[in-house]
Amino acid sequence: MESDPPEDRAAEIRARTIELAREILRVVSAAFLRVVESPEFKTTPLADDAKERLKTHATIIATLAMEVQFALASADDEHETSEQRATRQPRVERFYAEGKALLDDLSSVGYVAASHHVMETLVEFIDLDPRGTFLRIKALLTSACRTAYQQEHEAMRLFVRIVERYLADYRDLIEHDEECRDAMVTMLDLFIEAGWPPALRIALRLGDLFR
Image (cartoon, rainbow, N blue to C red; front, side):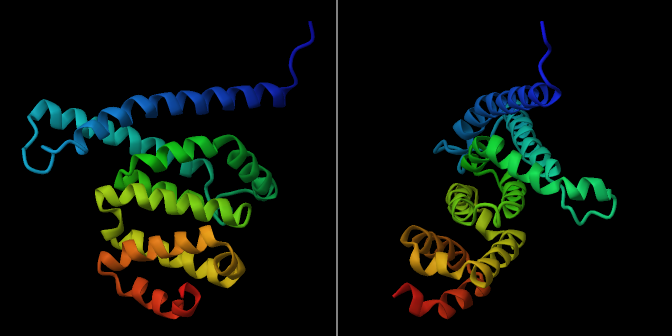
């Protein structure tokens, strides 16, 4: 019997790895959200054992998000070989095709540390899928506002950088795609309500666009 080609075997291994990560995330995030979304969470201190479990769940979620980001380390990394740079774009395209569901799962959790890793990862896909990536960023921020991610300075800086890139390279998308325009308004509102002047300045610049 003929063995599968190496690429077929590699694709199968990647698919199994992603599905395993998604299954781990499903279990852990459900336990995490049961605690942080409970009415008592903000008013009643957790018992020590419950606090340790929550910390463990948060660490697993953040680690999964971090590993996804590491899988797409920047091509500008000084340690990356010329051969790795040459194969980078196909790797990015392949991961986006195979890993979108995992990114969506991570985005839906809303845990601050994980959300920032996912935001940084999504930046990698802007040129590949500008519209889909923009809407994924909006979905992530909508979930992450439950844990006040929009109040983080690093979140604001990254969001402003992303918006400036879209306005420079994909302005037509924001101007003419109603769903993307609404997403922009929603995201700006999150950061404006968090008190960030850069978000307000962007909104004022885009006032005519949103009328």
